[in-house]
Length: 227
Image (tube, rainbow, N blue to C red):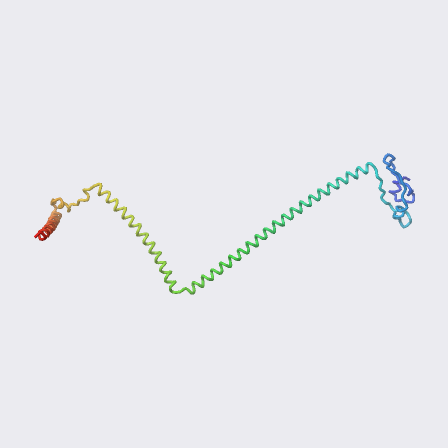
């Protein structure tokens, strides 16, 4: 029975524990004996047979596989550390953002409460002022209302005066272009002419007599002053 078969069948009594070697002679690195300390530390069954214990044999292929597996394990650990650090940084940034938003929310809530308190205070003060307002304040309020109404009325009158001034300017322009329109029929006496119409003629005669009387009065006054 070979070493491997005995090891797999757990038949420790058929094994020679003084020597161990690989079945493939090309991969044998070295031979040796198992020390008494190793033999004494090997666990045994109730019937005195030895239990299976892993035997480490250093080979060329095993050493290269162990080195490659060690490097891959090291790279895997480094990658895991980087991923863990990246996740931790993201988690800390998210927590910082959440804390910032919570702080802003609390500040806005405090500002809203402060403004509501101010509004409540001003509303109460206005109600108190309206309740205890004096008669002089009521009179002043009425006068201010009348003053506002008067200002509105004055503005309307100014607009009307402006419109009338424009109308007068337009009429004066028309009369300047047509001077005959300024001489009425009953003003012909000023040119020492009497019209055929009886009423207008009588008006012209009276106007002429009045003007001549005024002229005579002025001349008489001058004569009395000379005398």
